[in-house]
Image (cartoon, rainbow, N blue to C red; front, top):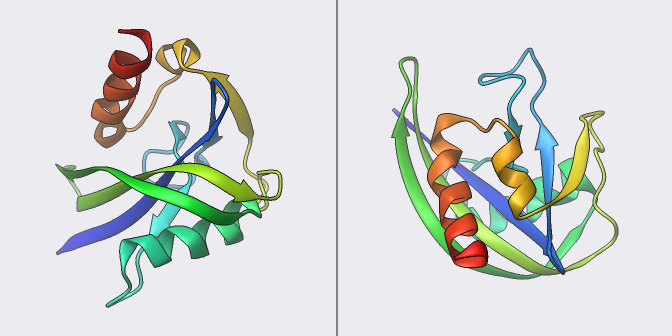
Length: 130
């Protein structure tokens, strides 16, 4: 079974909003782009809006599809739908108690991300830093 996930690359000027996964979660202790599982029959774009409201307290105004990544971990398979979130209402925060940060594009390379997120980090660095 493949778990479908929607994740937001929340952008503000030259910074990206990231959250630290709880040590109790799969891939715990890694930084991630906020988001979560799609409900059965839920479109990823709708899951993105719901998850970012629940996790970060923002209302998505504008989000564009960035990339879809399929990744097989030893214990599960995920299909990650990444969106660039370029307009939103509210100030993102860690509503579920998670540590969060705004980081520069270059700062992404200093953080540890889950394996499935690495191609996204690479694509963002490539595009922004050349």
